[in-house]
Length: 609
Ligand code: K7E
Ligand code: CUA
Ligand code: CA
Image (tube, rainbow, N blue to C red; front, side, top):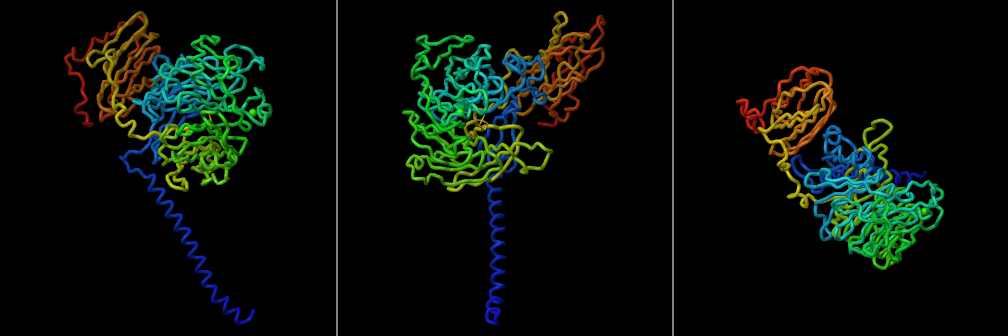
Protein backbone atom coordinates (compact mmCIF):
# COMPACT_ATOMS: atom_id res chain seq x y z
CA UNK A 1 0.00 0.00 0.00
CA UNK A 2 1.46 3.33 -0.98
CA UNK A 3 1.46 6.19 1.47
CA UNK A 4 -0.88 8.09 -0.80
CA UNK A 5 -3.42 5.35 -0.96
CA UNK A 6 -3.09 4.81 2.81
CA UNK A 7 -3.92 8.47 3.42
CA UNK A 8 -6.86 8.29 1.07
CA UNK A 9 -8.10 5.14 2.79
CA UNK A 10 -7.57 6.59 6.25
CA UNK A 11 -9.42 9.69 5.25
CA UNK A 12 -12.30 7.67 3.96
CA UNK A 13 -12.58 5.31 6.87
CA UNK A 14 -14.13 7.52 9.49
CA UNK A 15 -16.47 8.82 6.83
CA UNK A 16 -17.46 5.31 5.84
CA UNK A 17 -17.88 4.44 9.49
CA UNK A 18 -20.07 7.46 10.18
CA UNK A 19 -22.11 6.86 7.06
CA UNK A 20 -22.75 3.29 8.06
CA UNK A 21 -23.53 4.27 11.63
CA UNK A 22 -25.95 7.03 10.70
CA UNK A 23 -27.66 4.74 8.20
CA UNK A 24 -28.07 2.19 10.97
CA UNK A 25 -29.52 4.76 13.32
CA UNK A 26 -31.91 6.11 10.77
CA UNK A 27 -33.17 2.62 9.99
CA UNK A 28 -33.75 2.00 13.67
CA UNK A 29 -35.37 5.38 14.08
CA UNK A 30 -37.55 4.79 11.08
CA UNK A 31 -38.72 1.45 12.45
CA UNK A 32 -39.43 3.03 15.83
CA UNK A 33 -41.32 5.88 14.21
CA UNK A 34 -43.33 3.41 12.15
CA UNK A 35 -44.17 1.32 15.23
CA UNK A 36 -45.18 4.47 17.09
CA UNK A 37 -47.47 5.63 14.34
CA UNK A 38 -49.01 2.15 14.00
CA UNK A 39 -49.58 2.07 17.75
CA UNK A 40 -51.23 5.47 17.51
CA UNK A 41 -53.51 4.29 14.72
CA UNK A 42 -54.92 1.41 16.74
CA UNK A 43 -54.89 3.12 20.12
CA UNK A 44 -58.37 3.60 21.49
CA UNK A 45 -58.19 5.07 25.00
CA UNK A 46 -60.00 3.24 27.81
CA UNK A 47 -63.65 4.26 27.76
CA UNK A 48 -63.59 5.33 24.12
CA UNK A 49 -65.32 3.19 21.54
CA UNK A 50 -63.89 1.49 18.53
CA UNK A 51 -65.04 2.56 15.11
CA UNK A 52 -65.95 -0.88 13.81
CA UNK A 53 -67.30 -4.14 15.04
CA UNK A 54 -65.40 -7.05 13.50
CA UNK A 55 -67.46 -10.21 13.64
CA UNK A 56 -65.33 -13.29 13.11
CA UNK A 57 -66.66 -16.77 12.60
CA UNK A 58 -65.51 -19.11 15.34
CA UNK A 59 -64.93 -22.17 13.17
CA UNK A 60 -64.77 -25.29 15.28
CA UNK A 61 -65.57 -23.26 18.40
CA UNK A 62 -69.12 -23.20 17.03
CA UNK A 63 -69.57 -19.54 17.88
CA UNK A 64 -68.71 -16.10 16.54
CA UNK A 65 -66.29 -13.62 18.08
CA UNK A 66 -66.82 -9.89 18.26
CA UNK A 67 -63.77 -7.62 18.25
CA UNK A 68 -63.41 -3.86 18.23
CA UNK A 69 -61.48 -2.33 15.34
CA UNK A 70 -58.96 -0.69 15.23
CA UNK A 71 -58.04 -1.57 18.83
CA UNK A 72 -58.39 -5.32 18.19
CA UNK A 73 -59.99 -5.65 21.63
CA UNK A 74 -62.02 -8.80 22.19
CA UNK A 75 -65.58 -7.86 23.16
CA UNK A 76 -67.86 -10.84 23.04
CA UNK A 77 -68.30 -14.45 22.08
CA UNK A 78 -71.75 -15.38 20.82
CA UNK A 79 -72.19 -19.09 21.43
CA UNK A 80 -74.36 -20.69 18.74
CA UNK A 81 -73.80 -24.36 17.99
CA UNK A 82 -72.10 -25.38 21.20
CA UNK A 83 -73.26 -25.07 24.84
CA UNK A 84 -71.43 -22.43 26.83
CA UNK A 85 -72.01 -22.85 30.55
CA UNK A 86 -70.30 -19.62 31.52
CA UNK A 87 -72.73 -17.62 29.44
CA UNK A 88 -75.69 -19.77 30.45
CA UNK A 89 -76.11 -20.86 26.84
CA UNK A 90 -77.71 -24.23 26.04
CA UNK A 91 -76.00 -25.88 28.98
CA UNK A 92 -79.06 -27.55 30.44
CA UNK A 93 -81.96 -29.39 28.82
CA UNK A 94 -84.54 -27.16 30.49
CA UNK A 95 -83.41 -23.98 28.75
CA UNK A 96 -84.91 -22.53 25.59
CA UNK A 97 -81.47 -22.15 24.01
CA UNK A 98 -80.77 -25.83 24.66
CA UNK A 99 -84.10 -26.91 23.21
CA UNK A 100 -83.59 -24.81 20.08
CA UNK A 101 -80.08 -26.09 19.52
CA UNK A 102 -80.91 -29.74 20.28
CA UNK A 103 -83.92 -29.60 17.95
CA UNK A 104 -81.66 -28.41 15.13
CA UNK A 105 -79.01 -31.13 15.42
CA UNK A 106 -75.82 -31.96 17.34
CA UNK A 107 -74.44 -29.83 20.18
CA UNK A 108 -71.41 -28.72 18.22
CA UNK A 109 -70.85 -26.85 15.01
CA UNK A 110 -68.26 -25.44 12.63
CA UNK A 111 -69.00 -21.84 11.67
CA UNK A 112 -67.41 -20.37 8.54
CA UNK A 113 -69.14 -17.44 6.90
CA UNK A 114 -70.74 -14.59 8.83
CA UNK A 115 -73.15 -12.63 6.63
CA UNK A 116 -74.73 -9.27 7.51
CA UNK A 117 -78.14 -8.15 6.28
CA UNK A 118 -78.28 -5.21 3.86
CA UNK A 119 -80.78 -2.62 2.77
CA UNK A 120 -80.13 -0.74 -0.46
CA UNK A 121 -76.58 -1.94 -0.70
CA UNK A 122 -75.55 -1.06 2.84
CA UNK A 123 -75.39 -3.03 6.06
CA UNK A 124 -78.56 -2.28 8.00
CA UNK A 125 -77.37 -3.76 11.30
CA UNK A 126 -80.34 -6.07 11.73
CA UNK A 127 -79.24 -9.65 11.25
CA UNK A 128 -76.17 -11.78 11.07
CA UNK A 129 -76.38 -15.21 9.52
CA UNK A 130 -73.81 -17.95 9.98
CA UNK A 131 -73.46 -21.49 8.68
CA UNK A 132 -72.52 -24.71 10.45
CA UNK A 133 -70.54 -26.61 7.87
CA UNK A 134 -70.39 -29.82 9.91
CA UNK A 135 -74.07 -30.31 10.60
CA UNK A 136 -75.84 -28.47 7.77
CA UNK A 137 -77.35 -25.65 9.77
CA UNK A 138 -77.80 -21.93 9.48
CA UNK A 139 -78.31 -19.60 12.44
CA UNK A 140 -79.64 -16.08 12.62
CA UNK A 141 -78.32 -13.63 15.20
CA UNK A 142 -80.36 -10.63 16.27
CA UNK A 143 -78.00 -7.67 16.35
CA UNK A 144 -80.19 -5.81 18.84
CA UNK A 145 -78.97 -8.30 21.42
CA UNK A 146 -76.09 -10.12 19.71
CA UNK A 147 -77.85 -13.36 20.62
CA UNK A 148 -79.10 -16.29 18.57
CA UNK A 149 -82.66 -15.81 17.34
CA UNK A 150 -83.04 -18.89 15.13
CA UNK A 151 -81.25 -22.09 14.14
CA UNK A 152 -82.47 -24.41 11.42
CA UNK A 153 -81.20 -27.56 9.81
CA UNK A 154 -81.00 -27.54 6.01
CA UNK A 155 -82.28 -30.80 4.52
CA UNK A 156 -80.71 -32.78 1.67
CA UNK A 157 -77.24 -31.20 1.73
CA UNK A 158 -73.99 -32.20 3.38
CA UNK A 159 -71.19 -29.83 4.35
CA UNK A 160 -73.14 -26.54 4.45
CA UNK A 161 -70.20 -24.37 3.47
CA UNK A 162 -70.77 -21.27 1.33
CA UNK A 163 -73.32 -18.83 2.75
CA UNK A 164 -74.49 -15.50 1.36
CA UNK A 165 -77.55 -13.27 1.31
CA UNK A 166 -79.40 -12.92 -1.97
CA UNK A 167 -79.01 -9.26 -2.99
CA UNK A 168 -80.35 -6.68 -3.08
CA UNK A 169 -83.51 -7.85 -1.29
CA UNK A 170 -81.99 -10.24 1.29
CA UNK A 171 -85.18 -12.25 1.07
CA UNK A 172 -83.16 -15.45 0.95
CA UNK A 173 -79.93 -16.58 2.44
CA UNK A 174 -78.45 -19.37 0.41
CA UNK A 175 -76.09 -22.09 1.48
CA UNK A 176 -74.40 -24.76 -0.56
CA UNK A 177 -73.55 -28.35 0.21
CA UNK A 178 -69.84 -28.83 -0.36
CA UNK A 179 -69.89 -32.57 0.21
CA UNK A 180 -71.71 -34.66 -2.38
CA UNK A 181 -74.38 -37.21 -1.50
CA UNK A 182 -77.44 -38.60 -3.22
CA UNK A 183 -79.35 -35.55 -1.99
CA UNK A 184 -81.32 -36.62 1.01
CA UNK A 185 -81.38 -40.35 0.28
CA UNK A 186 -79.33 -43.08 1.89
CA UNK A 187 -77.31 -44.39 -1.02
CA UNK A 188 -73.59 -45.16 -0.83
CA UNK A 189 -73.34 -45.26 -4.63
CA UNK A 190 -71.03 -42.42 -5.67
CA UNK A 191 -72.45 -42.32 -9.19
CA UNK A 192 -75.64 -40.91 -7.67
CA UNK A 193 -73.89 -38.08 -5.86
CA UNK A 194 -74.95 -34.48 -6.40
CA UNK A 195 -74.61 -31.18 -4.60
CA UNK A 196 -77.32 -28.67 -3.86
CA UNK A 197 -77.62 -24.97 -3.27
CA UNK A 198 -80.38 -24.31 -0.75
CA UNK A 199 -82.37 -21.08 -0.66
CA UNK A 200 -83.70 -20.31 2.81
CA UNK A 201 -86.25 -17.77 3.90
CA UNK A 202 -83.90 -15.22 5.46
CA UNK A 203 -86.13 -14.77 8.49
CA UNK A 204 -87.57 -18.20 9.31
CA UNK A 205 -84.60 -20.08 7.82
CA UNK A 206 -87.03 -22.59 6.29
CA UNK A 207 -85.57 -24.07 3.11
CA UNK A 208 -87.77 -22.78 0.30
CA UNK A 209 -86.16 -24.61 -2.60
CA UNK A 210 -82.92 -26.15 -3.74
CA UNK A 211 -81.07 -26.45 -7.03
CA UNK A 212 -79.18 -29.72 -7.54
CA UNK A 213 -76.38 -30.63 -9.93
CA UNK A 214 -73.52 -33.04 -10.45
CA UNK A 215 -70.30 -31.73 -8.89
CA UNK A 216 -69.88 -29.70 -5.74
CA UNK A 217 -70.12 -26.12 -4.53
CA UNK A 218 -67.62 -24.52 -2.21
CA UNK A 219 -68.05 -20.79 -1.60
CA UNK A 220 -71.09 -18.64 -2.38
CA UNK A 221 -71.62 -15.01 -3.33
CA UNK A 222 -74.57 -13.02 -4.63
CA UNK A 223 -74.80 -10.74 -7.63
CA UNK A 224 -76.16 -7.31 -6.74
CA UNK A 225 -79.11 -7.05 -9.12
CA UNK A 226 -81.35 -9.94 -8.05
CA UNK A 227 -80.49 -12.18 -10.96
CA UNK A 228 -77.55 -14.52 -10.50
CA UNK A 229 -75.92 -15.99 -7.44
CA UNK A 230 -72.54 -17.67 -7.77
CA UNK A 231 -70.73 -20.65 -6.29
CA UNK A 232 -67.22 -21.92 -6.90
CA UNK A 233 -66.94 -25.61 -7.74
CA UNK A 234 -63.67 -27.47 -7.23
CA UNK A 235 -64.97 -30.97 -7.70
CA UNK A 236 -66.62 -30.90 -11.12
CA UNK A 237 -64.97 -34.31 -11.44
CA UNK A 238 -67.50 -35.55 -8.85
CA UNK A 239 -64.61 -37.58 -7.47
CA UNK A 240 -64.35 -39.17 -4.05
CA UNK A 241 -60.55 -39.01 -3.69
CA UNK A 242 -58.33 -35.95 -3.47
CA UNK A 243 -56.40 -37.09 -6.56
CA UNK A 244 -59.67 -37.43 -8.42
CA UNK A 245 -60.71 -33.92 -7.43
CA UNK A 246 -57.68 -32.40 -9.16
CA UNK A 247 -57.90 -34.34 -12.39
CA UNK A 248 -59.38 -31.64 -14.58
CA UNK A 249 -57.46 -28.58 -15.66
CA UNK A 250 -60.53 -26.47 -15.27
CA UNK A 251 -63.39 -26.57 -12.81
CA UNK A 252 -66.14 -24.00 -12.68
CA UNK A 253 -68.05 -21.14 -11.20
CA UNK A 254 -71.73 -21.95 -11.18
CA UNK A 255 -74.22 -19.15 -11.79
CA UNK A 256 -77.78 -19.79 -10.63
CA UNK A 257 -80.49 -17.69 -12.21
CA UNK A 258 -82.73 -17.09 -9.20
CA UNK A 259 -85.79 -15.60 -10.99
CA UNK A 260 -85.67 -18.55 -13.41
CA UNK A 261 -85.52 -20.97 -10.48
CA UNK A 262 -88.53 -19.23 -8.92
CA UNK A 263 -90.38 -19.56 -12.21
CA UNK A 264 -89.57 -23.28 -12.42
CA UNK A 265 -90.84 -23.59 -8.89
CA UNK A 266 -94.13 -21.89 -9.77
CA UNK A 267 -94.48 -24.16 -12.80
CA UNK A 268 -93.97 -27.26 -10.70
CA UNK A 269 -90.69 -28.24 -12.37
CA UNK A 270 -89.24 -29.86 -9.29
CA UNK A 271 -89.12 -33.05 -7.25
CA UNK A 272 -89.87 -32.97 -3.56
CA UNK A 273 -87.14 -34.45 -1.39
CA UNK A 274 -87.80 -34.44 2.34
CA UNK A 275 -90.57 -31.89 1.75
CA UNK A 276 -88.26 -29.48 -0.06
CA UNK A 277 -88.80 -28.66 -3.74
CA UNK A 278 -85.58 -29.58 -5.55
CA UNK A 279 -84.94 -28.27 -9.07
CA UNK A 280 -82.64 -30.57 -11.01
CA UNK A 281 -80.47 -28.23 -13.04
CA UNK A 282 -80.42 -30.59 -16.03
CA UNK A 283 -84.19 -30.35 -16.33
CA UNK A 284 -84.44 -26.55 -16.33
CA UNK A 285 -82.12 -25.12 -19.00
CA UNK A 286 -80.46 -21.87 -17.92
CA UNK A 287 -81.09 -22.30 -14.22
CA UNK A 288 -77.42 -23.19 -13.70
CA UNK A 289 -74.58 -22.06 -15.96
CA UNK A 290 -71.12 -23.58 -15.55
CA UNK A 291 -68.39 -21.04 -16.23
CA UNK A 292 -65.01 -22.76 -16.69
CA UNK A 293 -62.23 -21.43 -14.46
CA UNK A 294 -58.79 -22.87 -13.62
CA UNK A 295 -58.45 -25.97 -11.50
CA UNK A 296 -60.02 -26.06 -8.03
CA UNK A 297 -61.06 -22.47 -7.37
CA UNK A 298 -61.92 -21.36 -3.83
CA UNK A 299 -63.14 -17.85 -2.97
CA UNK A 300 -66.06 -16.34 -4.82
CA UNK A 301 -66.52 -12.57 -4.50
CA UNK A 302 -68.67 -10.08 -6.35
CA UNK A 303 -67.24 -6.59 -6.82
CA UNK A 304 -69.01 -3.77 -4.95
CA UNK A 305 -70.43 -2.37 -8.21
CA UNK A 306 -71.84 -5.80 -9.04
CA UNK A 307 -70.05 -5.89 -12.39
CA UNK A 308 -67.78 -8.86 -11.85
CA UNK A 309 -67.53 -12.05 -9.92
CA UNK A 310 -64.01 -13.07 -8.95
CA UNK A 311 -62.98 -16.69 -8.46
CA UNK A 312 -59.71 -17.10 -6.58
CA UNK A 313 -57.49 -19.73 -8.15
CA UNK A 314 -56.16 -21.68 -5.15
CA UNK A 315 -54.17 -24.17 -7.26
CA UNK A 316 -53.72 -21.59 -10.00
CA UNK A 317 -51.83 -18.33 -9.32
CA UNK A 318 -54.69 -16.40 -10.88
CA UNK A 319 -58.01 -14.79 -10.12
CA UNK A 320 -60.65 -15.27 -12.79
CA UNK A 321 -62.73 -12.18 -13.52
CA UNK A 322 -66.19 -13.02 -14.83
CA UNK A 323 -68.72 -10.52 -16.14
CA UNK A 324 -71.64 -10.91 -13.71
CA UNK A 325 -74.24 -10.22 -16.44
CA UNK A 326 -72.92 -12.02 -19.53
CA UNK A 327 -71.18 -14.74 -17.46
CA UNK A 328 -68.15 -14.47 -19.78
CA UNK A 329 -64.60 -14.65 -18.45
CA UNK A 330 -63.04 -11.24 -19.12
CA UNK A 331 -59.58 -11.71 -17.59
CA UNK A 332 -57.44 -14.11 -15.61
CA UNK A 333 -54.71 -12.00 -14.00
CA UNK A 334 -51.83 -13.58 -12.12
CA UNK A 335 -51.65 -12.47 -8.51
CA UNK A 336 -49.38 -14.91 -6.64
CA UNK A 337 -49.33 -18.38 -5.10
CA UNK A 338 -52.41 -19.88 -3.49
CA UNK A 339 -55.05 -17.18 -3.96
CA UNK A 340 -57.97 -18.00 -1.66
CA UNK A 341 -60.27 -15.01 -1.15
CA UNK A 342 -60.64 -11.50 -2.48
CA UNK A 343 -62.00 -8.33 -0.90
CA UNK A 344 -62.47 -4.72 -1.99
CA UNK A 345 -61.82 -1.11 -1.03
CA UNK A 346 -64.47 0.59 -3.16
CA UNK A 347 -61.81 2.40 -5.21
CA UNK A 348 -61.60 -0.26 -7.90
CA UNK A 349 -58.95 -2.31 -6.14
CA UNK A 350 -59.05 -5.91 -5.08
CA UNK A 351 -57.11 -7.52 -2.24
CA UNK A 352 -56.46 -11.21 -2.58
CA UNK A 353 -55.19 -13.51 0.17
CA UNK A 354 -52.29 -15.69 -0.94
CA UNK A 355 -52.14 -18.77 1.26
CA UNK A 356 -48.86 -20.14 -0.08
CA UNK A 357 -47.08 -16.79 -0.36
CA UNK A 358 -48.40 -15.63 3.06
CA UNK A 359 -49.29 -12.29 1.53
CA UNK A 360 -52.13 -9.95 0.78
CA UNK A 361 -51.79 -8.65 -2.76
CA UNK A 362 -53.45 -5.43 -3.83
CA UNK A 363 -54.36 -5.20 -7.50
CA UNK A 364 -56.48 -3.03 -9.74
CA UNK A 365 -59.46 -4.67 -11.42
CA UNK A 366 -59.67 -2.40 -14.48
CA UNK A 367 -55.92 -2.67 -15.09
CA UNK A 368 -56.17 -6.45 -14.86
CA UNK A 369 -58.94 -6.43 -17.45
CA UNK A 370 -56.91 -4.11 -19.71
CA UNK A 371 -54.24 -6.80 -19.52
CA UNK A 372 -51.04 -4.75 -19.69
CA UNK A 373 -49.54 -6.62 -16.76
CA UNK A 374 -49.42 -3.56 -14.52
CA UNK A 375 -52.34 -4.53 -12.27
CA UNK A 376 -50.32 -5.44 -9.15
CA UNK A 377 -50.10 -2.37 -6.90
CA UNK A 378 -48.67 -3.69 -3.65
CA UNK A 379 -47.92 -6.77 -1.59
CA UNK A 380 -47.66 -7.13 2.14
CA UNK A 381 -46.45 -10.11 4.21
CA UNK A 382 -48.88 -11.58 6.73
CA UNK A 383 -48.16 -14.15 9.42
CA UNK A 384 -48.80 -16.85 8.30
CA UNK A 385 -50.74 -18.60 5.57
CA UNK A 386 -53.74 -16.37 5.23
CA UNK A 387 -57.18 -17.83 4.51
CA UNK A 388 -59.90 -15.24 4.24
CA UNK A 389 -59.29 -11.55 4.09
CA UNK A 390 -62.02 -8.96 4.45
CA UNK A 391 -62.10 -5.18 4.19
CA UNK A 392 -64.65 -3.05 6.05
CA UNK A 393 -68.00 -3.04 4.26
CA UNK A 394 -66.56 -5.08 1.38
CA UNK A 395 -69.72 -7.16 0.88
CA UNK A 396 -71.83 -4.04 0.38
CA UNK A 397 -71.99 -1.65 -2.55
CA UNK A 398 -70.07 0.93 -0.51
CA UNK A 399 -66.89 -0.44 1.09
CA UNK A 400 -65.16 2.06 3.34
CA UNK A 401 -61.64 1.28 2.19
CA UNK A 402 -59.86 1.91 5.47
CA UNK A 403 -59.30 -1.38 7.30
CA UNK A 404 -58.71 -4.90 6.21
CA UNK A 405 -58.43 -8.03 8.33
CA UNK A 406 -56.14 -10.86 7.35
CA UNK A 407 -57.34 -14.12 8.91
CA UNK A 408 -54.21 -16.20 9.11
CA UNK A 409 -54.19 -19.93 9.58
CA UNK A 410 -50.92 -20.27 11.48
CA UNK A 411 -49.46 -18.00 14.12
CA UNK A 412 -46.21 -19.92 14.76
CA UNK A 413 -44.10 -17.56 16.91
CA UNK A 414 -46.41 -14.54 16.81
CA UNK A 415 -47.56 -14.82 20.42
CA UNK A 416 -46.23 -16.10 23.74
CA UNK A 417 -45.75 -19.84 23.38
CA UNK A 418 -48.49 -21.83 25.10
CA UNK A 419 -47.50 -25.33 24.12
CA UNK A 420 -47.31 -27.02 20.74
CA UNK A 421 -50.67 -25.61 19.67
CA UNK A 422 -50.90 -21.86 19.21
CA UNK A 423 -53.84 -19.47 18.91
CA UNK A 424 -55.14 -18.40 15.54
CA UNK A 425 -53.76 -15.14 14.27
CA UNK A 426 -55.45 -12.16 12.74
CA UNK A 427 -53.75 -9.06 11.42
CA UNK A 428 -55.15 -5.61 10.90
CA UNK A 429 -54.01 -3.88 7.73
CA UNK A 430 -54.39 -0.20 6.95
CA UNK A 431 -55.50 0.01 3.31
CA UNK A 432 -56.37 3.70 3.25
CA UNK A 433 -53.16 4.69 1.45
CA UNK A 434 -51.44 3.58 -1.71
CA UNK A 435 -49.30 1.11 0.20
CA UNK A 436 -50.77 -1.34 2.67
CA UNK A 437 -49.51 -1.41 6.21
CA UNK A 438 -49.88 -4.18 8.80
CA UNK A 439 -50.49 -2.34 12.08
CA UNK A 440 -51.54 -5.02 14.57
CA UNK A 441 -51.89 -8.72 15.22
CA UNK A 442 -54.32 -10.35 17.60
CA UNK A 443 -54.99 -13.94 18.60
CA UNK A 444 -58.26 -15.81 18.84
CA UNK A 445 -59.65 -19.23 19.64
CA UNK A 446 -59.90 -21.66 16.75
CA UNK A 447 -60.73 -20.85 14.09
CA UNK A 448 -62.00 -17.75 12.37
CA UNK A 449 -62.52 -18.41 8.67
CA UNK A 450 -64.22 -15.26 7.55
CA UNK A 451 -65.12 -11.91 9.09
CA UNK A 452 -67.37 -8.94 8.51
CA UNK A 453 -66.77 -5.40 9.70
CA UNK A 454 -69.64 -3.06 10.40
CA UNK A 455 -69.38 0.56 11.47
CA UNK A 456 -70.56 1.26 15.00
CA UNK A 457 -72.81 4.09 13.74
CA UNK A 458 -75.03 1.51 12.01
CA UNK A 459 -75.70 -0.22 15.30
CA UNK A 460 -75.57 2.80 17.58
CA UNK A 461 -79.30 3.21 18.07
CA UNK A 462 -80.12 -0.37 17.39
CA UNK A 463 -78.42 -2.42 20.08
CA UNK A 464 -80.79 -2.52 23.04
CA UNK A 465 -79.71 -1.80 26.59
CA UNK A 466 -82.13 -4.09 28.40
CA UNK A 467 -84.62 -6.73 27.37
CA UNK A 468 -88.23 -5.75 27.50
CA UNK A 469 -89.75 -8.00 30.14
CA UNK A 470 -92.44 -10.03 28.39
CA UNK A 471 -95.89 -10.15 30.03
CA UNK A 472 -95.43 -13.88 30.62
CA UNK A 473 -92.35 -13.37 32.78
CA UNK A 474 -92.51 -13.49 36.55
CA UNK A 475 -93.02 -10.04 37.98
CA UNK A 476 -91.51 -8.71 41.14
CA UNK A 477 -93.91 -9.71 43.93
CA UNK A 478 -95.52 -12.48 41.91
CA UNK A 479 -92.95 -15.18 42.50
CA UNK A 480 -94.38 -18.62 43.12
CA UNK A 481 -93.71 -22.31 43.49
CA UNK A 482 -96.11 -24.54 41.54
CA UNK A 483 -96.33 -28.28 42.22
CA UNK A 484 -97.76 -30.84 39.84
CA UNK A 485 -97.16 -34.49 40.70
CA UNK A 486 -93.39 -34.86 41.01
CA UNK A 487 -92.78 -31.70 39.02
CA UNK A 488 -92.00 -28.43 40.72
CA UNK A 489 -91.85 -25.12 38.88
CA UNK A 490 -90.12 -22.27 40.66
CA UNK A 491 -90.93 -18.85 39.23
CA UNK A 492 -88.10 -16.81 40.65
CA UNK A 493 -87.01 -13.21 40.25
CA UNK A 494 -83.70 -11.58 40.91
CA UNK A 495 -82.59 -8.01 41.38
CA UNK A 496 -79.67 -6.52 43.29
CA UNK A 497 -79.12 -8.32 45.57
CA UNK A 498 -81.74 -10.92 46.18
CA UNK A 499 -83.37 -14.01 44.78
CA UNK A 500 -87.05 -14.39 45.50
CA UNK A 501 -87.78 -16.92 46.85
CA UNK A 502 -84.71 -17.43 49.00
CA UNK A 503 -85.88 -20.81 50.21
CA UNK A 504 -87.38 -23.54 48.05
CA UNK A 505 -88.38 -26.87 49.49
CA UNK A 506 -88.75 -29.98 47.37
CA UNK A 507 -88.73 -33.73 47.78
CA UNK A 508 -85.85 -35.91 46.76
CA UNK A 509 -86.17 -37.16 43.17
CA UNK A 510 -88.57 -34.42 42.11
CA UNK A 511 -88.07 -32.71 38.80
CA UNK A 512 -87.41 -29.06 39.52
CA UNK A 513 -87.59 -26.30 36.93
CA UNK A 514 -86.33 -22.85 37.87
CA UNK A 515 -87.65 -19.99 35.73
CA UNK A 516 -85.39 -17.10 36.62
CA UNK A 517 -86.37 -13.58 35.60
CA UNK A 518 -83.96 -10.69 35.98
CA UNK A 519 -86.22 -7.74 36.75
CA UNK A 520 -83.45 -5.15 36.55
CA UNK A 521 -83.98 -2.20 34.24
CA UNK A 522 -80.35 -1.08 34.21
CA UNK A 523 -77.92 -2.05 31.49
CA UNK A 524 -75.17 -4.54 32.30
CA UNK A 525 -76.87 -5.74 35.51
CA UNK A 526 -76.60 -9.41 34.71
CA UNK A 527 -77.26 -12.02 37.38
CA UNK A 528 -76.73 -15.72 37.28
CA UNK A 529 -77.59 -18.73 39.35
CA UNK A 530 -75.46 -21.70 40.23
CA UNK A 531 -76.86 -24.47 42.41
CA UNK A 532 -74.44 -26.58 44.36
CA UNK A 533 -73.88 -30.04 42.81
CA UNK A 534 -76.40 -29.45 40.05
CA UNK A 535 -73.75 -28.36 37.54
CA UNK A 536 -75.78 -25.64 35.91
CA UNK A 537 -75.17 -21.95 35.48
CA UNK A 538 -77.88 -19.62 34.25
CA UNK A 539 -77.14 -16.11 33.11
CA UNK A 540 -79.90 -13.54 32.84
CA UNK A 541 -79.38 -10.09 31.43
CA UNK A 542 -81.68 -7.26 32.53
CA UNK A 543 -85.23 -8.18 31.57
CA UNK A 544 -84.32 -11.69 30.51
CA UNK A 545 -85.75 -15.00 31.70
CA UNK A 546 -83.89 -18.31 31.63
CA UNK A 547 -84.87 -21.78 32.70
CA UNK A 548 -83.18 -24.88 34.00
CA UNK A 549 -84.58 -28.30 34.83
CA UNK A 550 -82.89 -30.82 37.10
CA UNK A 551 -83.71 -33.68 39.43
CA UNK A 552 -83.44 -32.96 43.13
CA UNK A 553 -80.66 -35.09 44.61
CA UNK A 554 -80.43 -36.71 48.00
CA UNK A 555 -81.84 -34.86 51.01
CA UNK A 556 -79.89 -31.92 52.29
CA UNK A 557 -79.22 -28.23 51.92
CA UNK A 558 -78.17 -26.97 48.49
CA UNK A 559 -77.28 -23.30 48.36
CA UNK A 560 -77.79 -21.39 45.16
CA UNK A 561 -75.86 -18.21 44.53
CA UNK A 562 -75.44 -15.44 42.00
CA UNK A 563 -72.57 -16.06 39.58
CA UNK A 564 -72.17 -12.53 38.20
CA UNK A 565 -70.61 -10.07 40.60
CA UNK A 566 -73.40 -7.53 40.67
CA UNK A 567 -73.28 -5.39 43.79
CA UNK A 568 -71.72 -4.92 47.18
CA UNK A 569 -74.17 -7.57 48.38
CA UNK A 570 -73.35 -9.98 45.56
CA UNK A 571 -72.01 -12.60 47.95
CA UNK A 572 -75.16 -12.33 50.04
CA UNK A 573 -77.25 -12.88 46.92
CA UNK A 574 -78.02 -16.52 47.58
CA UNK A 575 -80.73 -18.89 48.72
CA UNK A 576 -81.37 -22.48 49.72
CA UNK A 577 -82.86 -25.41 47.94
CA UNK A 578 -83.94 -27.71 50.76
CA UNK A 579 -84.33 -31.27 49.58
CA UNK A 580 -86.34 -33.44 51.96
CA UNK A 581 -86.90 -37.17 52.10
CA UNK A 582 -90.04 -38.48 50.42
CA UNK A 583 -93.04 -38.15 52.66
CA UNK A 584 -91.47 -35.49 54.87
CA UNK A 585 -93.73 -32.45 55.12
CA UNK A 586 -92.67 -29.36 53.15
CA UNK A 587 -93.00 -25.75 54.17
CA UNK A 588 -94.71 -24.26 51.18
CA UNK A 589 -93.37 -21.03 49.82
CA UNK A 590 -96.21 -18.78 50.87
CA UNK A 591 -95.82 -16.06 48.29
CA UNK A 592 -94.18 -12.78 47.65
CA UNK A 593 -92.27 -10.95 50.29
CA UNK A 594 -94.81 -8.16 50.28
CA UNK A 595 -97.39 -10.64 51.57
CA UNK A 596 -94.99 -11.64 54.31
CA UNK A 597 -94.88 -8.05 55.49
CA UNK A 598 -91.41 -7.40 54.11
CA UNK A 599 -90.78 -4.80 51.47
CA UNK A 600 -89.86 -6.17 48.09
CA UNK A 601 -86.19 -5.59 47.29
CA UNK A 602 -85.26 -2.72 45.06
CA UNK A 603 -82.17 -1.69 43.20
CA UNK A 604 -81.63 1.16 45.63
CA UNK A 605 -79.13 1.42 48.39
CA UNK A 606 -76.79 -1.32 47.38
CA UNK A 607 -73.68 0.69 46.76
CA UNK A 608 -74.09 0.84 42.99
CA UNK A 609 -76.37 3.84 42.61
CU1 K7E B 1 -61.74 -20.29 2.76
CU2 K7E B 1 -64.75 -22.10 4.92
CU3 K7E B 1 -64.46 -19.49 3.50
CU4 K7E B 1 -61.93 -21.31 5.54
S1 K7E B 1 -63.29 -21.19 3.84
S2 K7E B 1 -60.39 -20.02 4.70
CU1 CUA C 1 -76.54 -10.89 41.36
CU2 CUA C 1 -74.33 -11.17 41.83
CA1 CA D 1 -61.16 -30.15 -9.64
